[in-house]
Length: 472
Image (cartoon, rainbow, N blue to C red; front, side):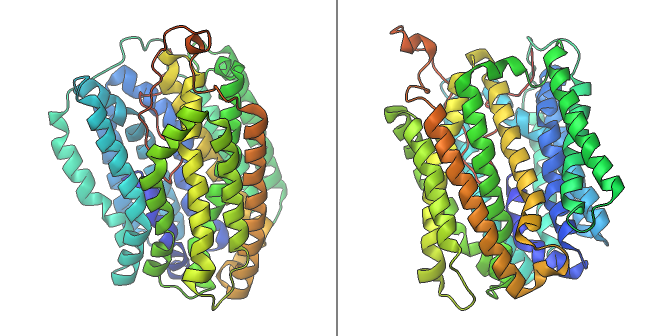
């Protein structure tokens, strides 16, 4: 449900906008309302599961996500839809972190790799079918059906959940970092609001809201440094490789978020594609991810992550630059598909190695927190990209729905995103070391300590943590 909603909604955006008379800013909030609450609370969700039971928090998250999906489908106005998307994000933050931790606790060690592999495969399939399924539902029924598909899934999961044993982290102790979660949410919300609403009319209240957001983010960092139980321990950033890998994640995934926000809307508005055709147009990206992600991880393990994390963002940039030449009337096979394939190959080189580098740079006991931080970083990057992009591409107001304006704006946006991705490749070359996937004992010639390698490579961002992200 969480990964599917990361891709199906993009296909429905133009139709939702026309049906509910939504502005560009409202379309941004439909995406960012979900991402904002998910990114702000995902680490807190892991902490709650560790302390109060992963199955319990998972089921609460599923129930909230399902109810919010029904509200999304029934929304009579764009404002109610945005509020329901925020509620979906909160549900996603509760259910996502503990999902792999539940598998880890429920299966014997010998069966665990296959179980985690099934989890990874299903999240990949969800992302793969999302654009196509979303396009079909919009074409055949309504954009509301995009949200209704979550209802039977959620009901089935809740009904089956009593078969899953409860589990907790006995080492989790101390108070929850509620102050940090609140400051982080307020900070991200304030900055995002100022970026989105300021594109149309920059007022004193918007400037003040943005300033409050910045102050809250600074206060969040201060709180995390002083807190006895921080949800994001800043000491982890003392590792140069951990910091570098997260910086690469932020820059490159901002570019990737820009691509997925605009490309499907561009195909529908400027090139006249139907929703299902637009969804199918990006399917090669996910097929490449599904087919080559494991090989990408093996390559990074063999030659080190520095080259994949340098070359991958450059390929993404080349693919985006190729897309800047697309104009109405261009053939898909010769004009669009080559850029999509190059972009997909670059994304395949990035997704697995960047997560493996984050995990290898952290102490093994903090692998869950490390992966949770990386997941949050990727989602914040997507959040800010969607907030800033219409301003950069001059697609505010009704211009988003005008074919000529969308074509020009898409070209500008892809050029800017290409520059971002290329910068990420340069950062990786300058900061990521060749032996970053080797543990400290291996570098000293001592026996290796296994680094967790089970993760999911999907279009929604870097994988969620293999264990929930509780501090302490």
